[in-house]
Image 1 (cartoon, rainbow, N blue to C red):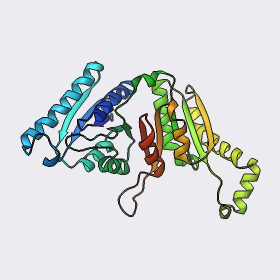
Image 2: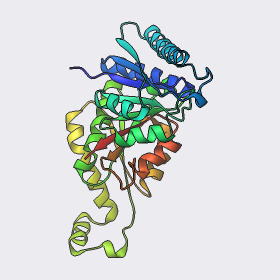
Image 3: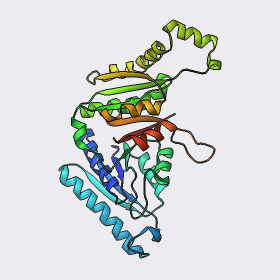
Image 4: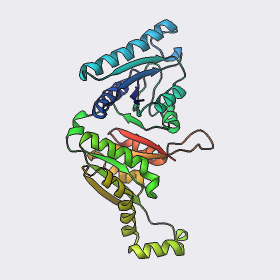
Length: 290
């Protein structure tokens, strides 16, 4: 069964930008597009009052208009729309589970419920088991054809970033773009040194060569799998969020990983993903991994 690209809308300019981005990505990947509106009856947020039928009509019109617009832009693209009169977070998490990826508008605050970076969007990203892409209202499709790169963060061992690297390389291949793989590093505290780690660092010739080798080892299988994708390996000392944001101006899409785990209270999206989603102006893909 073919997974669609699913986009959640809330009627805001940001979510409409998300629909436009999702439509282009569906065409590139040869996938169907699904447009959904998940909403709860919240009269205080609605310009149409407490009339349930009016609320339903408003939501239905929003998804129909969004679907019609993307169909006009991409003739031949398979587009389905649906209004889901259910609680937003579990509904969108379930939608993500059945999709190739879920797309949301960043900083949207529509008439029914705002997505990002509010509580709904953060919960969805924190609980989704599939990639979630967030798109700002100033989505710039021209950047996708202007030599901009897919920027992806890499950290830890090769397996730790495999899901994010896979997503980045697959996206780059579909777009004919290059990939910049970024690994940030910092000086470890003195107590972190051990005989084993000191031996590895000594064999590598120091911290920076060690980090460069670690990045090259993580990227190697993806270079082999996607030989037509140009790759830039970028290592830099600093926090991961800061280093990624320092190259965000050259990115048409930024990809970060998120470890799947449940915090003691609620869910976590991770400090790196949090920083990038708040401050990068390009779309950001958050890819969960074990």
